[in-house]
Length: 285
Image 1 (tube, rainbow, N blue to C red):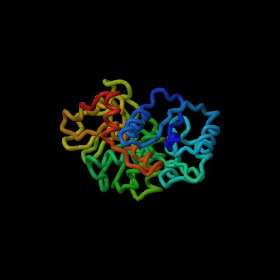
Image 2 (spheres, rainbow, N blue to C red; image 1 turned 120 degrees about the horizontal axis):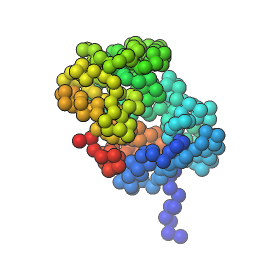
Image 3 (cartoon, helix red, strand yellow; image 1 turned 135 degrees about the vertical axis):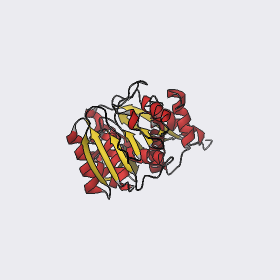
Image 4 (cartoon, rainbow, N blue to C red; image 1 turned 60 degrees about the vertical axis):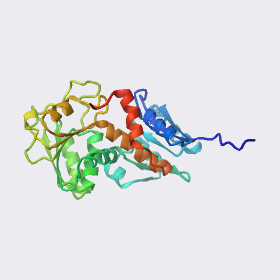
């Protein structure tokens, strides 16, 4: 025998549907770039099969896997432990397998926070967060843990916004309040960071959250979680008004970087991963 090792490290993702998940493209591009003998397998796992998939990953000694919709909450019942963020958020999108034990984490907010820090330090800042879904919840928790001074959460369903605001007040050192999203949202003068954590704009370059654009101000950070297209209408309009813009590719890339660090202890080149996504979605510019 040549001594060649034909056993690759296995990582991947469990979700359904999964055909439009681009994570496989960016992570495998980075594995190739760094000459890491690992694979990222995108698996369509129906809800009824989640337990079998998790047990299979453990049995096949996967290093870890991502968990996307509709499994982010249900997967918790199959895990041995949770990170602090996952406990607070109540959802898991990244599972590390080590010595047969499964630890759940949530890298949604961590990925956003890493991207945000490339343009501003969130500590002490005032944030307007649009939306109250899973992404908004994860982002709000990480911002609260990072020391933002205040988060205003707006949503068409005020109860959902209040649930996130209460979570920030109770579980982090940050302060937060909820406001109903009625008509065109006005951006308060003292807001430092505006975040679209809704799905508005996904796959539609002309769709935009219902906000009063004339209330955006020069120098304000305007971030969008939408990776496709990266140059959402919100970001294009914000850039015209002198805002600092942050697209959704950075959040997606950093989620991947953080996940692989948890699984393999390897730091991937974020630029390689971003380039792989830009080839699929186009660049921000």
